[in-house]
Image (cartoon, rainbow, N blue to C red):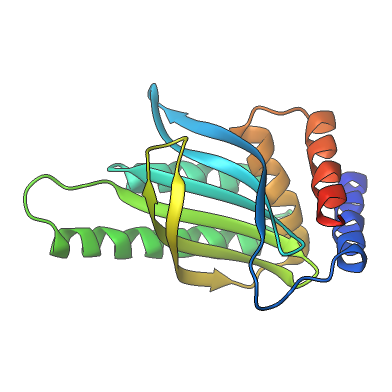
Length: 199
């Protein structure tokens, strides 16, 4: 695990040398994507993106049961990051922010909606690259339904400055879990992302 994490941090460092991003232009490419399925319904997707030289794992969720989904994320974070593991404090901050944002989206939906409630939309981004590492929580508008979203707008709600090692490892864990990848396949995807970022 330690060696894999060190390798990933070295990959991110190499991207910083290979890529000089235009600060005024956002370039984004989808490297890999997979659906998120709960109770036989597709409620979102996970994307591995390249954005201005950074590696981004983006989770897009659309569901009327967002509180339940966030509770499941909490369980996974507590399992992956027990109190004695370095990074556990970052995991706690991340889950607390998720719960705050979910409540904010629920209140907005309640105020703005009459009759049947539409689903909440939540975007979660783990970003690692030459410009730094952070977690962004946002809402979004899109055409289509998961897993074929065409994002129109992405509205940031909270940005979290967490431990870079936690972010680097957690974006790997998200891809492993959501996309049902094994570690060799994941490592190849991440190497491909860095190669493409350097073009």
